[in-house]
Image (tube, rainbow, N blue to C red):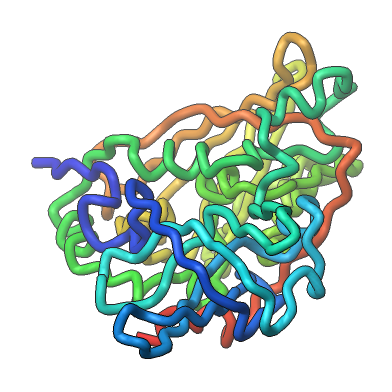
Length: 327
């Protein structure tokens, strides 16, 4: 018997209410420029006259920098109006930034430089092969929502573990643990592919995650060490790179919805250029006899972005855990 896994907003995975936007007016009390999230603290006065400090989370410094932010964009005492998605827990003054207006009339958001689609930014750029700098949709978390919301059939053990998941204590990302594929393919940051003689390297901005795909004909090592990104081997079928990955560590929420992935899983990927050569199409298939009752598969697209520069995002554990420590 299988158990369906659907949108993670239906259980404990999403702390921010994306369907609710509230506005506050106050002044900047703190501005913390760090990774994996920048934090803005705004002090407001309530109707009763008391002061409340809101903690507002936004994206990593590299994303904000591409939209014009710097560590000096906000100063203590600056009057601001903030639109935000609050957490579901109404007892907490914690939210995710939508936009911020300053007294000079300027409006700031995390991904304003990517207001259009990634295709709009790179329509004139065509790739010769799969190497280069590529991006998921940078204006949104579209790929993550696809991975999260796609219906998966879990085993009884997988469904039980998903039901028990608590993002405030179980989230691997909150502990600075990188996402393996396929979520690695969907996080809204840049990725760089390098083709070498005997291997292909893929580096992602988020947590500076690196993958090595061996193309020298080797097999997976028997009894090999389990790692976060696993052991990947690849071969070319004409212009399509076919990759198989095994020897993956167990991950508590590798699809960001609390459903675990086990050590016996096997991931197959196929990387190919789109007909117009502006996109990289990535087919993936995940088999996991421990937690998936049937394989999970799909296709994600990366847009060719040679005009952008990779900016690595290290993870500061104290910053990453800040939202949960304030509970």
